[in-house]
Image 1 (cartoon, rainbow, N blue to C red):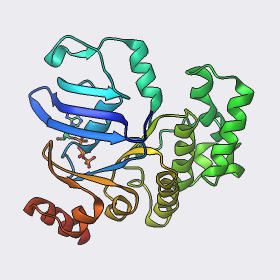
Image 2 (image 1 turned 90 degrees about the vertical axis):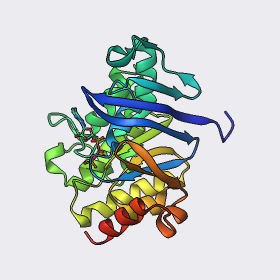
Image 3 (image 1 turned 120 degrees about the vertical axis):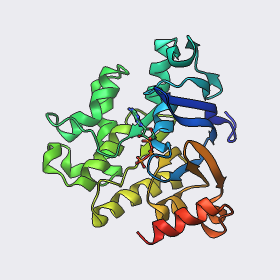
Image 4 (image 1 turned 180 degrees about the horizontal axis):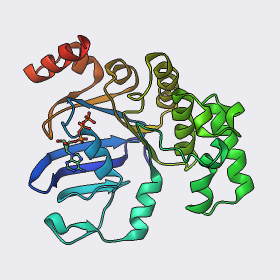
Length: 258
Ligand SMILES: Nc1ncnc2c1ncn2[C@@H]1O[C@H](COP(=O)(O)OP(=O)(O)OP(=O)(O)O)[C@@H](O)[C@H]1O
């Protein structure tokens, strides 16, 4: 695959919850190595776009393509669902998600958390998965926590474990849904550091965040959403350095003064 080939393409996406239209025709492309951040006010639709991209949520209109392969749908409108379970599994396992609330399994050790999906979903050999899992825990700086349970870790360590778990799927791209929002400021930085290192490695990522500094640091493209539409987008220098629309200017000054 050439460097510029798209990993994720979202084309004219529309999504409604009942009568409430929350995504109103959004196009986003993440090519290999792109870090695309989604910013915008609460309720603008950022998380919904991520969940539609990896098919955790249905959408009513528009296309979603993974490495050029369009999602196959059956039905239309609110009756539209992915048609091919094997394709859904392929896309979900290749677009690994990291959630705001970590979502680790409380009854499993950190190592078991990281190993679970590669063994049970992908059917990879346990010994091989364990070796890789320990390497990912080392990469995120918590190799010494392998045998601990989630409740014994700080929020920042739990989120780093969740990142190791996402990496263990060896996905084509990582999707981050407000990965630092649940953390105290001092723990936030340790997670930002890990995400930044992943960006520098050239990983493809879609990142929903309220952290404008992180978005400016890690992204090569920033999308500003307002009420389910893209209001402005561009490289971080332009978005943060010379915003064009009044809405983005207002959003940035409100965020800076929070
Ligand atoms: N399961 C749901 N049922 C009904 N409405 C929903 C559901 N999930 C989200 N919404 C609505 O969809 C809109 C977009 O929500 P979304 O969570 O995508 O926004 P967001 O930009 O990620 O916000 P935040 O920054 O607060 O997480 C909001 O109006 C929200 O209330």
